[in-house]
Length: 164
Image (tube, rainbow, N blue to C red):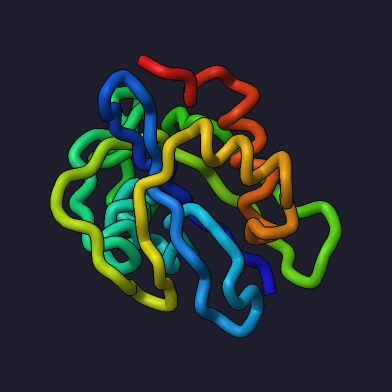
């Protein structure tokens, strides 16, 4: 199987510090691992629609802004039988070794609403300060889901998670 995923780095600023949403995966493939919200896109589902859907299912939040959404172009109206969209994500990933072959895109976004205690195959959905995320990642990177380790590291190394 080959999967394509949309993953969210949902950010907010509280008292000058940046926080992101982290959750625990409750599926048999990675039970109890910390991860970012997101998941598989359905066949022919637009990437940003999949991101919004996955965030809602797993966290209860409504995505209100997505960095890069303004770059989206689509071939709608040129050939009604074949439409392609193109846009700029925050980061892209590909598994290069492991039990699951996947490709995915991370999007930095903001969301509104109240977090669920548990979502679709998730639990302990919560806001985590980026400094705490960095410390936890430094202490135990294997506490994080295999698919998100590189994305979290990319985010932390990008400087995007620094205080505002």
